Amino acid sequence: MISYVFGFVSHIGDVQFIDYEYSGYNYLAYDIGNHFNEFAGVSDVDYSLYPDRELQGQWLRSYLEAYKEYKGFGTEVTEKEVEILSIQVNQFALASHFFWGLWALIQAKYSTIEFDFLGYAIVRFNQYFKMKPEVTALKMPE
Image (cartoon, rainbow, N blue to C red; front, top):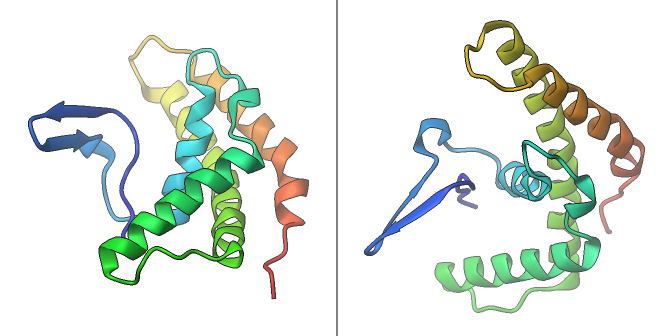
């Protein structure tokens, strides 16, 4: 599957610019998991805003339907396909916390931007360790 970087989007006619300074090919599930993590915000992070299973399921089903339609495979999506992608997304959401926690630690040392990078790193690592037991217990359907 092709993955797109989620983030700031500007609409100019029919062209969309999406965080090109951080863009690049990535795992589909990582980008979606990172997108879900960003529901919590950056300055005043609130992980209660992370989408629940129902919203995730609706979002992922819509994504898979659009992808299949684009590829010419129809639009039928099974519960198993949604469940597999959901597990992958939540596993990569966990990786996203770890990645951005490390990034924030580096920024705390070197960035000249006025932002509490150390505090942000702590928030991301705390969420990583909070989610880890639940996410690592997820099993792929047979």
